[in-house]
Image 1 (cartoon, one colour):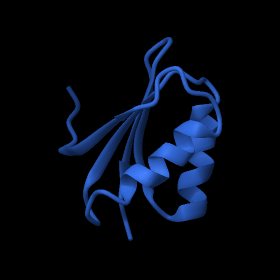
Image 2 (image 1 turned 90 degrees about the vertical axis):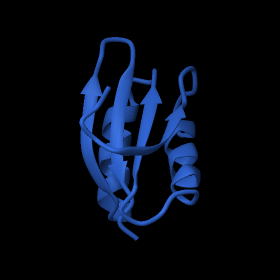
Image 3 (image 1 turned 60 degrees about the horizontal axis):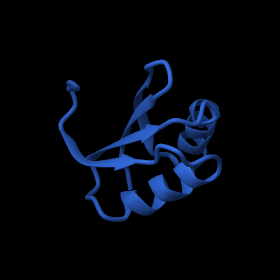
Length: 79
């Protein structure tokens, strides 16, 4: 359980780049500005990918967790 008030969870386990980022972008369309999306990935490349994506899009990457074989991201929709 996270300390964030997650509005939606997106599980992209088993998918590799660029699908976690593509699916994250799509999932953000389903939530309101200020809401938080939790994205779960098994692709180690998703850490730098999500950091770069957040910088490019302006959405706020609140936290990224490396849980061994799973990576968990909390993204705040900003626009």
